[in-house]
Length: 166
Image (cartoon, rainbow, N blue to C red; front, top):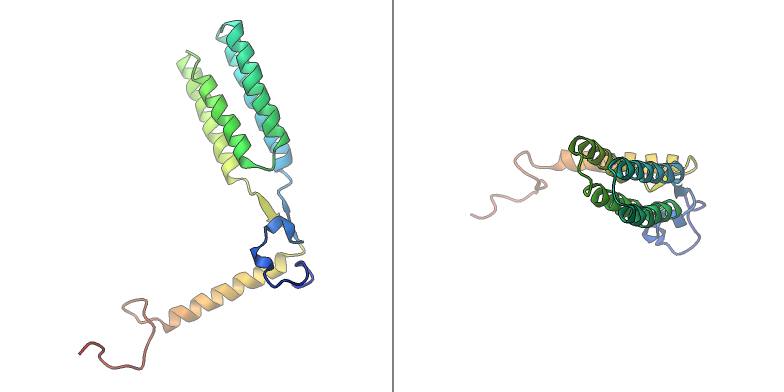
């Protein structure tokens, strides 16, 4: 494992995972975030045109939501920018008057927030996977040993003492 970690300091576990060899950014996020931003911007634009909104509100939508879509697409590594863009879409859609359409669009925004929230940030590649599985197996072994030593009535370990407080 020493070959995978940067040489020397002994505190490599304190560093960010993307600075350690074997970890990288989730590659599907590079595609999903711009597609998601384009879909939401296109849907909002369509809803504003179909809702016969005034041209100044349409221009403000293009400036703010379009700028947010571009910014979220450029900063695809950070979830916060995408979540902020979806919040802008939420408040922009709240200005529309058609209730059934808005309810469905709010559901679309909620599902998009869940997608962004559950999308992993950094993942391990195949070179570090055996070490990860070895650490998980070691932790399971430690937990099972602790459970075997536990007293049946609680979390205290068995001791060689007597009655205790008497």
